[in-house]
Image 1 (cartoon, protein in one colour):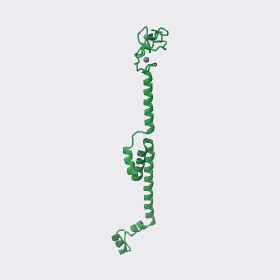
Image 2 (cartoon, helix red, strand yellow):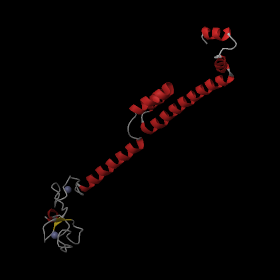
Image 3 (cartoon, rainbow, N blue to C red):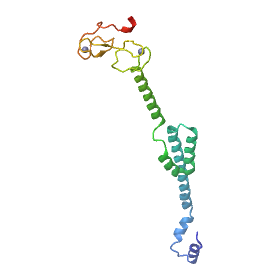
Image 4 (cartoon, helix red, strand yellow):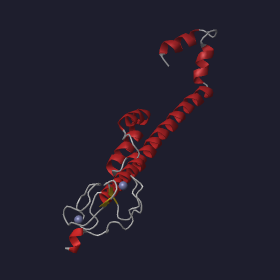
Length: 174
Ligand SMILES: [Zn+2]
Ligand SMILES: [Zn+2]
């Protein structure tokens, strides 16, 4: 308390500020101060915990995770704001799911576009494999479109194609 306030307070018993000064020295005011510090500590811990919880779901690297958590502990609410700005935009679970999806798509594409015998990349409309000469598809006798050996009916012109073409390579018989 500045000395001039004390001087004013001491100069007169009928000081209008006396009740205010009394309040600032009362246990009630100390309790308010205590509560303020308590809330600050709770807020600090909550910020650090939130950073830890969020970083664990976004950061794979243990060292970076430790740096994030330390930032939250040391800088509290300020650290939380900084972390919220620089944190990785997507969750680890989402990233893994995306990677898995891409992997599955690549696998599917790989299966569809390769010769089943020699694994040469082939296009959907190839009739025979250009490398090993195996027959991949036959053509419809009616419309000439490439069709799979296992199909019974041509999907383009509805002609019955079952058994009309041998499902083996012409090069095999030579
Ligand atoms: Zn082949
Ligand atoms: Zn056809």
